[in-house]
Length: 69
Image (cartoon, rainbow, N blue to C red; front, side, top):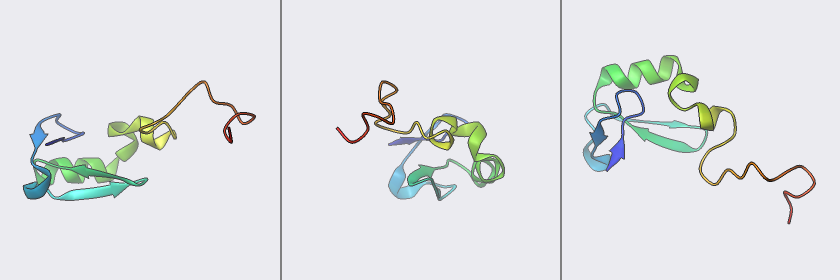
């Protein structure tokens, strides 16, 4: 199961009624076409951590000096 980023409802990834959208390498599933359209209009509103480069695995302790270690 996945969570629709717009309305926060659970969505079956294999059978998402609203389809899916890939944004910055992440795939988002939607409960309805309306939620998918809202996300496509303003993805940064619904996935700000990804828009700002803080997606899964983000480690705010890392700096430009330590990112290779």
